[in-house]
Length: 596
Image (tube, rainbow, N blue to C red; front, top):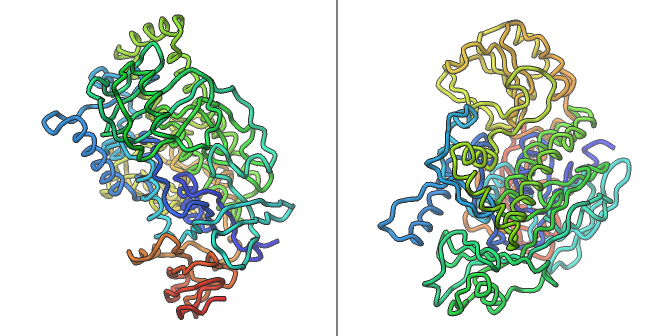
């Protein structure tokens, strides 16, 4: 089956940060992608409250640093309100099991920190819901089709593709199935994709019941701020008004899906804090969690793949799950797009599990270790005192902060150069740009610092998927060549002229030279899609034009039925027109109310 016979190259289940980021990476790679999300709006439930440096770097390399910085500043303003306007902005180096790290003890001489570039300087306290909004706007600019209020109810796979079944809230008929080349589950720890696809999901059983909430409190004057450890467990008050977290080692909750009540939160907070007068007067948003730690043994089964919490679950301390999931999406997106478009062999997808599974396993052990230190028994508390002493040293703080940041992440790739397999340093170039700024398009990059014609000749035949930049690097004068994959990781580097080994690396990661992609109509637009009108509701879709002569999407691109949906069409790859229209059900048309 050719890609033109699919409704979409890839369907992504879940429009959280991981699903949205993956969809954007797929669009940058030229794939036709649809995101299905059962929620009708961004999920405002309190979840991860920060991102790490590795995630900030990934967003910076896609041109999102200004939005990221603005969101970070807004979060810091909330923190200042909680601490009081007269108090200085606190430094923050992270925590391990609630053991706060002293930023004054941190040794930042590791080159990996300097290599992070401008991303290391943004505020990282960004709530997950705000990150989701940032990614949603980016998805709109790229032409990702997002259907909210649409639930994936099942799927069938065969040798040629995946038939996806879905249910749309409030529909009056219309299509209930579609055909895709592949399906990716980004739909969380209770994924509706993982189990039906037959993924093994081994791990360790939960010990705790945790609550995280934003509430209105009274009688909270005696609550400590920040992370607090007591004989009954652990609680957190802050870092912004009304945010509380409790952890009790009484086993998992009987029903994680039941609504969290004010009485339930109040009782837990009183037990753990030992402050009997504290009261929860209103619940703004709340969730339960456990330390259930499991990981799929493989992230791919045929034409079905997993990313984010669908592939691995663990205790949420430090927002590691969000960062881990963004890393999954960054690694998978360009590979899946290349295979879907026929530029790379199917075997490229095998490297997804090979590279990301070890990273996930390390994060699961990182969270398990924190649970061991948080237990209220005497042995665990003795161990916690020892680890606290170690953490409050320069070596201990630097080790823990570096692990949390993700700046030392490395894949086991072929080659013996020190840069091979690492996240590429954000090199300053003599043309006035930085390496990270050159990765906004999501294409691979070959850096030619020595103006070596022989090096460039070895990259012949990859003009449709590789950008070649000829500019010197003052910070690395000995570097003679650097091949950076679309995810920003170094696949090949050399300190000698000529480019020996480069052709093999290019073919390994980008496919055979000169191989045209399937269905040339689906190339990435030469200009980003225009933003939608602010008045457009969350049911809007923004998709690439499919004809030079008409701005209308093809009949296979159906809007969610039963709702009035505004669509906008971005320029097609060959410079066709744009247009807007409205549909009630079925194919969008240029006149309101004319849908099926």
